[in-house]
Length: 449
Image 1 (spheres, rainbow, N blue to C red):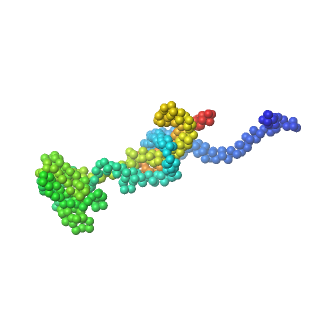
Image 2 (spheres, rainbow, N blue to C red):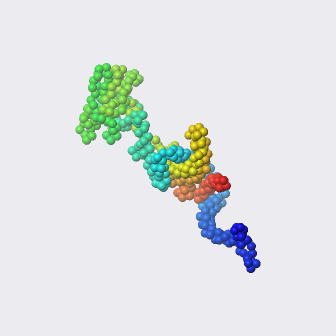
Image 3 (spheres, rainbow, N blue to C red):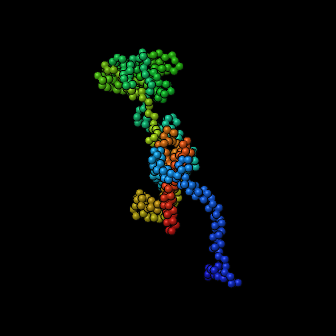
């Protein structure tokens, strides 16, 4: 009754017989007035730049000659831009997927543990760091030198646990030493060795600071019947005063050096030196020449070239996932909190395993949230610029190139070409639009439910 009266009041004639002013019409005018400043800003900051970018992409580098779609042809013929397109495609497929999957795993696993909130806080903390700061952090993490780069320090530590990487690059005998060059970087004893007669294998050319931390003071070899014994050591006394071919008290053993017994060109026995440099060969070594193979003098294992041409893109994607997995986890955790628990419990009562509950109930119910996270991250990686610019060194930046970085290089580099830069900007817009349309369609579908 009240609404009917209200409708009569709004639509009916006034007591004086004159129709009322349309309240709806008045609201449209007011709405237009309120929206006008926002529309002006939208036109100035969004519509005009897009329109001008499309216009500028049709002109040459100087902007004076119309060249049609030649700039767009350049996008698919220039090697650097093609690499950027390929890397951008890798980013769009890999980075959002990995970040979303990790976020889902973290959200599900931390839902039932007491310290789940603390774990989520730790995982989400990188979101508070700017891309610039994260780039600097991971430039240091991926440093080639294991003494500075965390990634290689861990990698070398694991490698050295399972494989001996002791190496003494630059080591060599003195001219008066009982060793001579054996070809290919190896060294041979000048005379055959015999069981029961200790052998001394002195080397120089290794900085004391480069010696393994486990190296111990060298010990003079002891004779052993039926065996060939000896000591390989660094014949150098820090501060001077040492005697050549004599084991002095402060000289260190060459831990891990491989010693081979060679007869007739064949290796008949081999051994590795202990931390004090001593080694023992079986009786088969009697009458053989001892050889220190070239493997002893190679550079020690120095880890992986994370920022080299091959691994630079996966490495940078790893740093991006480190930052954004927390974002995905928080959104997915919020979705998990809203799931109807009775459905999950009913499935368990019916005999479903946890994996079946997760795959057939949790994932389908979380599909809208997962779609939001995935689409958001896909749009985000299309604009990735600063992380690639900071982490990738100059020597491999071309290999890590992406469209947003190429847009900057083409538009503001030493040989700037605003025509090509505008074409790249338009291409990026065209790549974002389909993702946005899918997102808008999904949001409308959700709104109709």
